[in-house]
Length: 507
Image 1 (cartoon, rainbow, N blue to C red):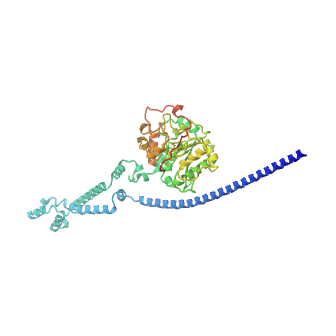
Image 2: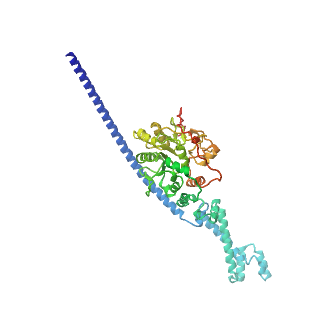
Image 3: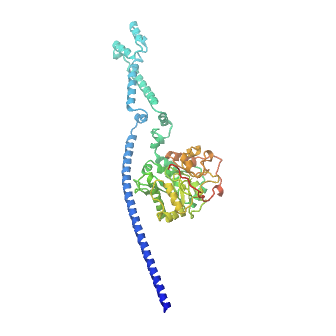
């Protein structure tokens, strides 16, 4: 009986313990519900903030469109005022022409007369002519009083007047304007039709980019063997994400990217708020077209890719619209890694994080497994920032939190493949001071600045992209061929974590 009572007591104790556990579980569930409610409230607040930002962005875009229309109206001015608009005002041109005509008029009249005083028969008149010969206006008045207007030979008068006007205009133009306009005038004779009627000071803004883009799309006239490149194109599938803005679409930069390196992506998508829909555009009108919303756009795009394209591509490249990427060389590097293992690579910085992070401007690449792991372990758990100005650093934090390692992007000679600046800075070694502090690898200049199989350059305008593409794909050196590349061209490895990371004094 005593044993039975003891068992009942233990059973009741266990029941009370289970009840307390259930109560604690209900309390935890209520706490989680309150946390979810707070998260929903924060999300609603973020949505309201995004709505306000969209309204501000719409107002800014309207102002930008108005400024664009104003620039269009200004650019429609043609003729001599367009040529001289940089260096001289209309008033100064008018004054120069008036002074020129003031001088030219009497001399034009006197060339057939006053310069040859011997035509006068009367010696007194001839002597007086010689005496006042140096004063054209007085000589003209003297001749008019002596002979009247009827003796004028209008053919000589008009011919010489036109000659002097033309000479005055030529001298005015070549003295008042700079060397660029002189070169422009020469280009009207020697340049092809594609650059006719373009002012040298404004040619970079007014060239017909869409027409130029079509020229680069056709490679049928080139002697190229793309066998190896085509094999890698099918084996290493890359989705390219390019943040841009509507004005760059209007200026033709997006068309240039599509006709140069963008066409070598397996798929390319652009992040912007478009005025006209195109299949490759992802609408980001909820964010203002500003650098401080770049992280918002990129995270939105990565989330979009994770949901809709994660199984269609091996790697995801993010590059700016002022970046040029040699896709064949990128595929060569990525062929040394497996896309079903997490990792991301680019130009490696050593600041702020133990594993460092990759530059956003030079472009960075995330493996399929790396993106999936970052979304599931970081983004979905709220551990990754979705808003901020320093896009590449926040992406690096998200990768480190999600245990996605940084992969090596150097070639076997320890030369960089991704580059944070334009080719002139890297080749000459004229690096900005911040890069020397940030970079994980030494910043070499000259011939050792860049890998033979360079992948990217940053801070390029549209015309530098055109020139670089032409030199890479439409220019060859006879008798020099690239051999089939050996596997040891790149060393496939994870980058070791830093013992300590660098925090710049000014950031």
